[in-house]
Structures are given as C-alpha cells and as structure tokens.
Image (cartoon, rainbow, N blue to C red; front, side, top):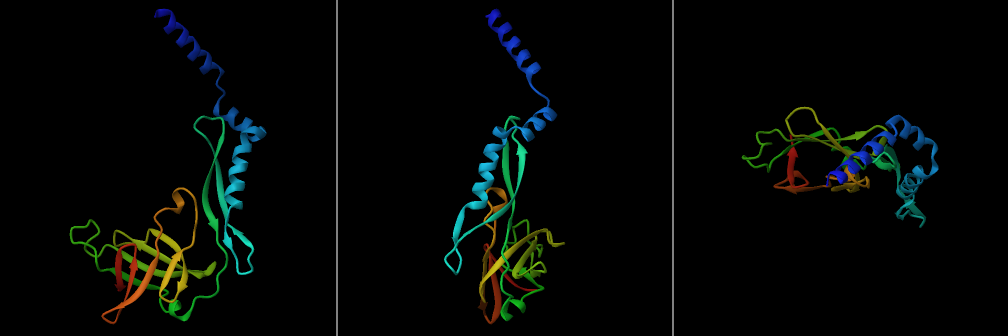
Length: 197
C-alpha cells in the first residue's frame, strides 16, 4: 500500500513539473494547427448552417460573432457564439411606427409577485442601425431598462424573435402580439399582459 502511494505522488509530481504554464499553452495554441482545427470546424459549422431560403430560393445561413476561449483542460479551444449578424429589413409599417417610443405597464402581475407594485415596465422602440426592427425593452425594478431584444415585425399585430444564437445568448427570447381588449390595445409578451402607460 505504501509503495502504491509513493508511485502516485511521484506521478503527480512528474505531471505537475511537466505541465506547461498558461502563457506557454496559449503560445502553442496560436501556432499549432491541430489545436485550432476543431475550433475552425465549429466556427465553419456555426457560419454555414443553412436555416432556410430567401425569396429567390437561395440557401440562407446565419453569420455569428464567435469567441475562442481556452478550454479548462488547456489543450483545445472552445468556440462560443456571442452575436448574430442580422439582415436589413424594410421600414416599419405605420402601425408599428405608431407604437415606437411607447411605454407599457404589465397589468396581470400577481400581488404576491416580487415584481408587483408597478415595477415591471416595458417599452417599444427602434434601433437606428437596424430601422426595420422593433426594440423590446423591459425593467423588473421600475427603473431604467436592463433587458433588450430586437424583434422582427411579422404582421401589424405581432413581432417574432430574430436571433438564432446557439447556447446561452439564444435563450429566454420574447414574441409579442397585440389585440384589443375592451377597446384598449393590449400587448401579450411571454405571459405578461401590457397596456400603454
């Protein structure tokens, strides 16, 4: 038993002494094609996956901004998608332009909710760089908006999700639809019922 323990410690000591520093691993990763090969394949997969066709029948794929990070093992890179390039859209219809720069109150939040008391605020806007999209913004503390999402108008009464980003940046996205309830325009967004403030 004692001999086995000494062998184990010797192996650990040998491994620890032979392990390169993080700086050495990064330098090797930058110059060693095998370590980048898997990351290259993943980036190509992200950027070449056909998600549909355009009006002319051509295959359409998404373009992503990706980040390479050294895996905790220190041997390979992982590719993490951060953002997606979105195409330009036609200008907003008059129905959506009338809703730009409007604020909405969530009217169906439970009194027992941690967000009760008028703390949930929603607004609709636009983004100058992508004028055909609707910006959906909300705050859960009654203050400045902290969460934003670009929506694509699908009709005069609804907007859908625009991004298709794998992993975490593509989670928890909203779709909105509008209807008249007792002659008051009401917006439904992920279970919230909202009316103009």
